[in-house]
Image (cartoon, rainbow, N blue to C red; front, side, top):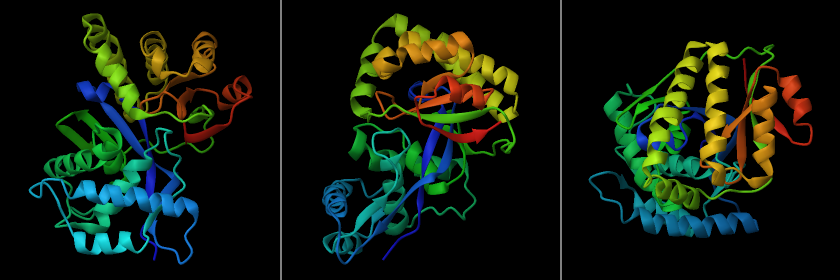
Length: 309
């Protein structure tokens, strides 16, 4: 048995800001994916995944049936007979490993589910987002529901505000383009929950709240608009501003070893780094107008190009 594939995602813009109603832009990233599976001779990883799935199923039973109902009889039977989530998506890397699992479970076991083939009105998207938010909170303590939504639909999603999201198109990639967006491997995993706790703690300070509104959200919104319009010149100008704000005000979310690297990009304009997901480890997202220059500047690190300008 092997179910359909669900892809990882990249939140290009909007990390932390979307908690406070900034814009956001999330795109599927098909390089990593996962599927529900059963094997005759399961590996240790499969057994471990199955154990976690059992706990997840127990949690799903506590969800209000007015929000979503599952075929628990079949789900429990499959989990008891060894079903697991076979995934190449790295965990703790900010690319949506739990989101893909949530999408796969909803797709296979939710009753009266909203399907990808329907006319996806804003109400349907918000309903899916709220279902996924509750499902994924099992893994993070608090979830926007966007990662599973992106994985489930496999299309870019534009977040205008908490209650206003839409499927969107993004400019076609330029395969011969010099610039691009890349992932930089920090070499360590990050945990979402502690990072979100730090952010919520900071939000108690008026100065931090003002910075978020006047700088972080302002630059994030501008980056989303620039990206969707294909205004590359303005995009890089705003990404640089965003990178500076993150370095100055989100230091705990950037692994210490990367503070100088972050600063170097801003000073040389070789690349601009930003958080990928909640930070604390995992991937760091990079933007550059010249991929060759960024690669030579970051020659000690492995870069994965995810989009070409």
